[in-house]
Length: 179
Image 1 (tube, rainbow, N blue to C red):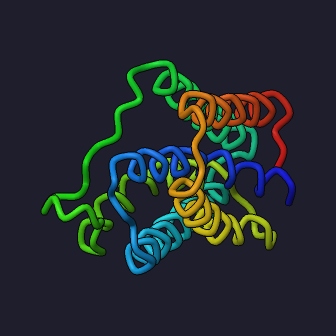
Image 2: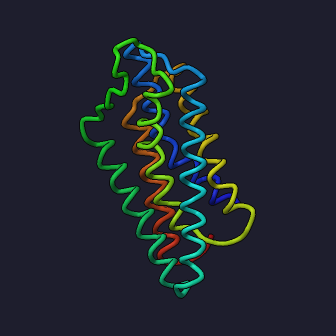
């Protein structure tokens, strides 16, 4: 269960950076938009966990451990690479109202859910922890999006930490094959 919580948090750390970037730009993200983002995350990640579980029934478990570990490792590398790069945030406020409306949050929610979906396919099992993963990622995402509007820190450090955690979890999965 602890690894699943750590995975959900590390996948959601980029949401903290997005919340901070929008707050610094003067763009407000209302609760209705945060709810849209959370629901999209839960739906897409649940589908991915279901798909991963079904694929896991068909593939030998060692293949699935390697696949899941590789996905997490490459997600971590990409996140770390982005943290070392320009760190620009896409502007989803299409109407320039400085308020991210729920319909604008759909695209942001889909973008934010992609990492969770990738990881959701890589984890498998029938334990409660695996099925709580979508809820944990959505909760962590909304929490970090909210906190991002209230705190200031270095975005590179936040995203770099998330990428590093994903790399470590991927390597553990590749070489130890558990969770």
